[in-house]
Length: 500
Image 1 (cartoon, rainbow, N blue to C red):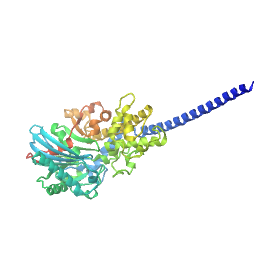
Image 2: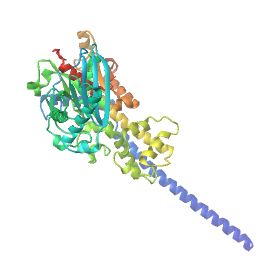
Image 3: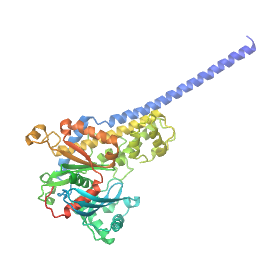
Image 4: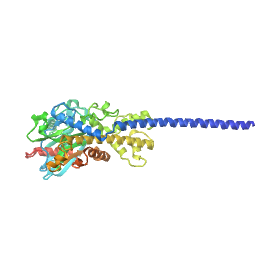
């Protein structure tokens, strides 16, 4: 073989060696990538297992919450579920007439309402104005907070031209009520942290601010948002026995027999029944493991150690739980690429984004990709990673919805309407007619997130069974927390004496 031949052989051998080396490197890269993908999948499997809520586990959550409710009615500080006496023993019955105003203070903003009522459960007209809560008010002074409310209400009334007959005040934070028109703040939840307001009578604070602003109007009915929702549900359907809020936060209230409220006998009237504010957000279901992704472990928000049930269910937190899972995946793998700084920013992913991700039914999950790019600044995410992201959002949604369903069934159990005690088929047949139980539900998470609503309704059916579930109606109520405050103000300013 000549020199040229040997050169060709050497060149071929060199090319083969290079090709082999490149192939080896590619295989190695693929092996590394595959191992990283497996680590991401390991995070997913861990989330699936720790967030699981099989029916048997939900039934135990129901029992635990019902026990806490009994304990909370017996004495103060006997339970994490506070079971607060609301002093509301009169609900609207449709006979109320006239013009009434309401102020609704919740987690996402202020609402100011004018409601005109006609006989026969008729709302002739209603006007609602929304105002977002400024961050400085959420962390400022009590006087500034209530002055802002009073000033805005004054402007609203001046535009409407009629002060109305009475004012209802929805204050959606835990408070201890002394009468229908007075109550002291126990603690803030969500993102509020006006420390000096704790222990103050919030109705008196608003009345003083109204006087400073020259308004001849005082609070004649104070309540939280669940009570307002219950009032509106009852206004249209007298079988409404409870109300649930599932939105930025979550809570419930229901109508309880006075003899069952042993801790508040001195505050009870001879009405026979009173609305109880459960404050179930502070419940910590022992059957549900706290994961590293649950906000209870993080001090990124006020009250980080508290409100365990709320932080597993409500809209303020679900997007953040998803972000924490994605951040863990990014630390364990390269499924999101290398530019993942956005995943380290607390609360950058909102729950509306989570719901949009889960409800994206396009073949290429285009909406998922858009949200990852626009909100988390993660670009060019492959389809398999988009599917992974959607699966995580589904797991978080299912746990939240199914836990909320367990809370609803716990109230039915406390009232003997879940089929286990006085709600059994035998006793129902003795009584003659099955009791119809209407639960009024309000909140964007339930109303606007269709899959959340579907998962919740399915879980209620699973826990109760078809026979009992057929007697339970979950009814959406819109603007209940605000309009309901005006309705209760109307009920208490009327001359009728009959109670719930």
